Length: 252
Image (cartoon, rainbow, N blue to C red):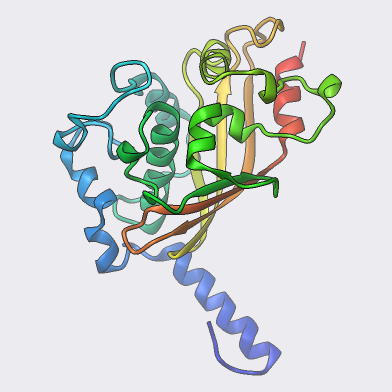
């Protein structure tokens, strides 16, 4: 940012920095050598690292085998609103987001989750109490993401009453083609990676007793990943409108 003291100078410097971040074609050289970047060259899923290859031969998967993302990748490619150039900051952040989400949901052992720091990790939603990796693994990624302070009688989905498997089954049933996610904008690069995202799917299956309506269910949010020198997430902060998202399942 600009070091000038005047308001005009500061504003101009900020504008230049934002333009730089949003148009930067590649990550800094040192980040191109991180485990995330190297794993992306191993083949397998086009949008996620740490899913296939020799580095995963001893990984313990929640359901016995790596998940298959073919259906949700198809939905993502058909309906994404941004197609980031390979190697751009936005593409790298999107890969980190998808890899992180995959690992937190599908990998059982902390030592197999390579997109997060092995010791220092926490995640929070909408400013609620941060959860450790062990806590997230115990309750499941969906339940951690849908944490709420609403009274139980007002909860469309109650994460306190769901298990890892029941939470995953609920959304896999509601979204048989998957729940796609894309990065819309990146506001800052490492070590605090701030970005806007879009999450969407089609309710083609029932949800908590509500029949499928076939319409798109989506929400937008902002996330901040605090990462180390190897681009491993040390802290994840999510902010989004939970109520509107869940209310979308009730459309008749």
